[in-house]
Image 1 (cartoon, rainbow, N blue to C red):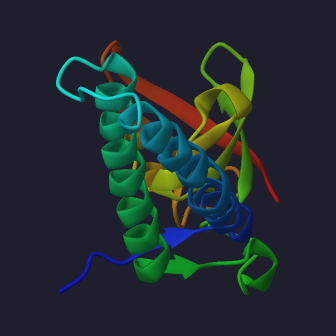
Image 2: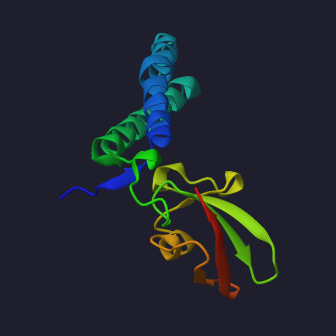
Image 3: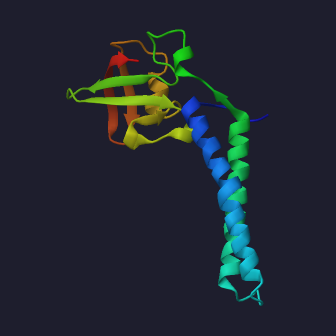
Length: 156
């Protein structure tokens, strides 16, 4: 059975864009470079040829990975969520910790995580703890530094 996974429409679009870039731009460019390097003669000591072949294998591996991820992805559009009073996949959640500091997180798929921009996976410890919670609920999360307690102050 395949591993189905959730992704936002924006995340799916970024994966498709990367796939198109690799297939239509990067791979043809590297193929041309390898062909030019092969035309120079002895391939066994030709660094450009060896590097080019290695780069082609990397591109092909990434193309296969992206194709598989997109084939098994379930695109979930946050505006289509019926329960706006609960934390759901794609929701943006404002949390307040015990020191009164606030942080904003969006629950996204595993392929679109970017903690610096506030995007965390829905299967991460914090993401999993938040799913299904209501406004003003307290959420306890085990972190390397110990248990952290957050209060949900906004869901959108």
